[in-house]
Length: 260
Length: 337
Image 1 (cartoon, one colour):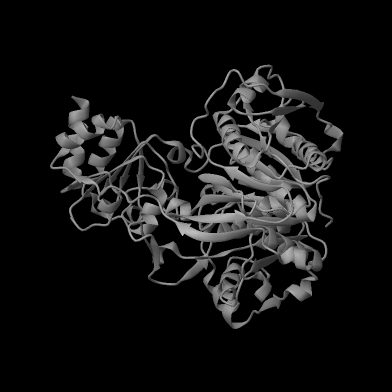
Image 2: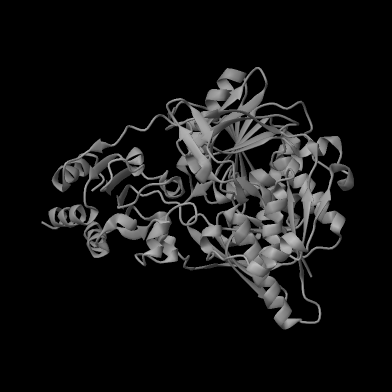
């Protein structure tokens, strides 16, 4: 069984200051981190692997972490190995610099096909930064398999997965067959921590393979972004909060605003 | 993978409708009205695809909101149900067949679970651009592109994105993108019906059943009022009593877990829940970005903190510099009596 987890590295928003007045985003500390939804995806993959290993120990599943981006994404993939991935592949090519979700899905799908057979693809439902939430559905389309998106609970069963997915205000249980694309809602999973020993090994012993656009045999139309970012925009400057003297004045204000 | 292409020169703007209890959702009517405004500028027709059933009045409501032509795709189980999810690929194929035949230039869908999954799959299938989760959207008549504004980092700021590529171009929109539609009862439009061919769907996808499932913090995400504490709250019991008095959910910033004030499932912020209550009361929370990220959707934020320079006051609609526990007690008292 082969599980591929597509992970994303994002700019850590704790290093950002958004100044609405001057309409600028200041990057105070340019630090990158593994997206929380990707961490949840890795945890779910590790749990599925553990369940499969328990029932079929002779042939444990392999988890491959896959990402797309520049050299710095190497860090995210090593962290992914510390979270349980057995190996890691980075798709790194100048052609991917301005990749939108279309290009990302084309490249990731081509890499997954290049690996050969696959059973399960796990992605985060929505990244913290751009948060378009397109990747799961696009990958399923590109790989021509069903998708179970916005999963809040995942259990391995003998024939596939039992998934509970969010659907607006409903939760729906799906008996999902394999192969499958699964996207997970990070809030639904307890945050886990990377294994310290694995983290050391990830940097000292293991390697991250790097594949280029040429390795993936992508055509020009596959790496052409179809959604182009023009500029940033800002919400109106927030009215600086009115300072109140005491609880009484506050209650009056809350009543005036009809929040109580 | 072979990409689909439209048959004719692309034209017109389409909306994919969603129904609830047999009527178009408010978001659907809003999109229809938004499409009408773009169509008047571009010389387009507004066409609406309606996946669903048992909606005798849906077509006339949509025509009043601005539609010229309605295509009802009928099946007894609408798409927004457990049975609908099981037949999702049949709905997807019905819409992509319709678009191949009708050659839309632009397609708008709701930023809902159904709309977002459809839009991403269709955009991948046709190879056209997609802008997800727009808070504002227009058609650029010079570039013949969708230009949409969408939130980044959960609404800390926005990015303006333009589509390109082969038709159709897609966008999903959030509520309040176009404002409430003008109803015009004198409008005229046509309606056609096609039946959903279930067997065109992906046969690998087995039936699903609806379940009731408890998320670790389901209440926080949908709570209308939240009382939240940080390290400086002083007396956490006073905060709990205020939550009771307000009928609010109790939550905390990440650092409140270190103090044992709240458990992991009740954290608001980057590493916890993102909430959008009517009222958010932050007691003794400094308000660093990792926390305030989670409260961008809150309508009215009250902050109480002893430090007048605490960043939380920049996020607050009303603030009191003082002892959070004391204010919490007074607030609870004045609400009780």
